[in-house]
Image (cartoon, one colour):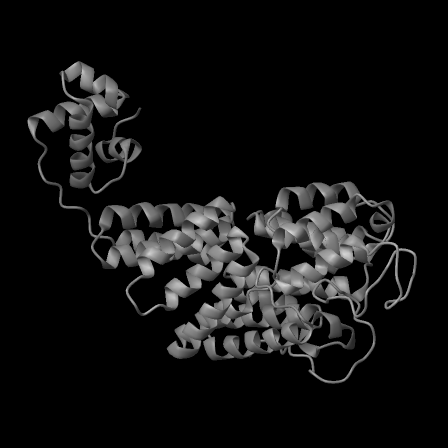
Length: 422
């Protein structure tokens, strides 16, 4: 059975979309109700924040406007202002602040549904899959507006697909009628198309995934949304095109995404885009670029993306014969993937680890054997140097050689290799 058709028609409509997270305001809006074109006393800071977000420029100013909006008495009582401000904080990389503000505003009349939806997004970006599933599932079954319910269902479908549960993602899409492209989905089309693309990617139907992500991208661009922090459709389409053998398309999309990500300047967004460039690259710089992407993602605490990057890096290091480094990356990728619910990726990393050839251990010299015994006993480098009357640099050099001989990277792995407890 094919995936449910989440492609709503691209024409028609005209009614106000029920969910506006991805839409810039149609006209300027002011707290006193003054129409656009006159001279207002003050522009709504949430309006300004969203405009900066969707344009993908000046992240610092966007976050500042969002913070101002959430301190504004009028904005805090307006569901759309709260939506715009929290969305800007989330995609500006301020996840802790967004969650704290969302918790503070969660019980305000008119904002409960959308605040819960955005707190679910924070949970997913932080790798808290259980919390994201709980919040999204409750919303999708709630009495919230149809737009909020559809976005919750779409994000749930995408989350299930990303975690490898393709069957569950398909079933959920059918259950919530996403396969019938309901009329109330007009304002949610980018979310639903991205969900469909995620299902196709997880199922290995890469050409379909590329098509869905490209339509999603056209929808967003038509609405003025060019910031990849909001929805990384170019990166996903690039990965799908690469898997489908369309290398030129993949490279062009990945580089466009990276350029837009750098313009926004948020670490998760740049790291995610850079990882796509690395994966589709044909210039031999994949390991270098993946390493840099990993550093950016770690800085952003982007654990789901970091697990995927660690896996890709580990596979490439293994292909270059760098077994110790590959083992370190794959083991970490397995742990991260398990932590964020990415079952397929955790299994892939475990298989890649099992496929690594065991390191050929060269015999230790007498001095290295002494240093090894002290190291696994818990002595520091300085203490080993003092105990053996050696220079600190000599001890460090010996330890590096010991790690290389065992195919490991540190003391914990050395203890494990020798079956020794600290």
